Length: 146
Image 1 (cartoon, rainbow, N blue to C red):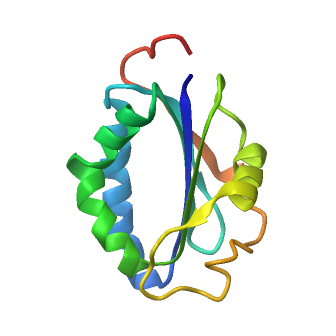
Image 2: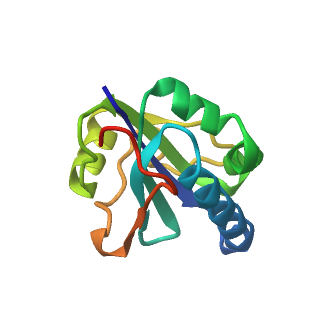
Image 3: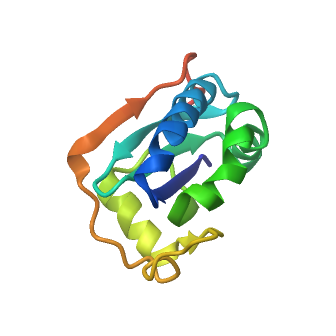
């Protein structure tokens, strides 16, 4: 069964946005051609908050992507750039919408390690996301079975 992954990152200061944007473009390019990537979306929320929603053939495909290339280069920087970061994964046949991603994040998500956490970081008590800033992420080759 396909794996769905959601991440939420809040950049803690304006000075980190340019470097984050460069890494975001690179990782988006990488994910589109990653083996096992089925599709997804990105969401530019308010207050320098960014979401990703991706579907994978399975956990191994996602881990291979995370541990290589642009994504691997960006990961160590996020703990310094972000004051809120969280993730959630579950199995699903179809890519959910943002409302479901938000619900899963609040109910089942976990906070990631950041060096300068906000007061809301551990409890995932953030505002509901603005759903109008979404853009699709499509694989460069057709996914198998989705």
